[in-house]
Image 1 (cartoon, one colour):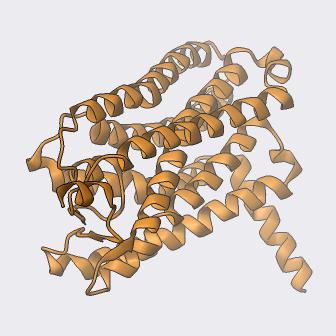
Image 2 (cartoon, helix red, strand yellow; image 1 turned 180 degrees about the vertical axis):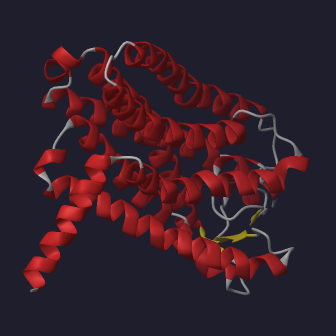
Image 3 (tube, one colour; image 1 turned 45 degrees about the vertical axis):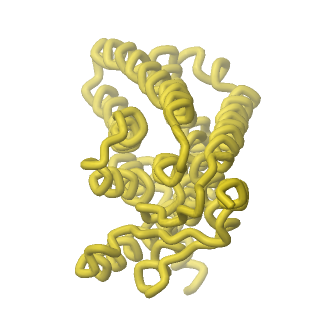
Length: 314
């Protein structure tokens, strides 16, 4: 009987979330719903504006469009199910739905880790090698870098998802989280998960620490180059563009590193839930706001697009 329980996966999982604190559910529902709507509208707006405005047909906005597409799919893989469960008595997700959620969330999260590093390289080339920028960041290289990010992210997800789903559960199906994520699913296993945790730590180093190290090195050179610019306006524009990317990097990597590179602890489970909600929901919502509020080109493109829409209506 134990062997059967170990080999046969459950038909559904129960996503506990904060069900032990029902007073939090309504405020969380409102926050998640507003965040999701803003994420959809903000990222769709960046994709549309970047495609329609010819001035934004540059490597920087090509990668920003990829980031917006990632954030759209990233949040859609988890938030709708979370909203349904928060307002439901039975907070369940089917086994197939959990597998799909785990795979998509991992794939897009891993892709974003690499894409943010690629974006820092683009800024390095633009500021430190301005005369050779168009030669370095040609269209073929941009497509290759984006493709490498996507393929690597999905390849990592195949590996991580397979290893996680192979762990025997022995009938355990209560996931102490809002969605199906590797650390939460590993806690369900009835066997020693040390090897899986070590492998997860190693992969996290590859996809989190190495990219963030490369980003910091890039920005060390960028700061040196910006300080040499004589024009105050030139310095301000360079710091403004790079500042947006640095804010996004700090928000995303900071919370993800806290979640995946700290030793597992029962005391930090609730804190871990909040942290994962931050990089899974809040950061994708803030990305479009950060890039538009701090970027004159994007704000100008928005104004032009709105003006054209009003002219068409008249």
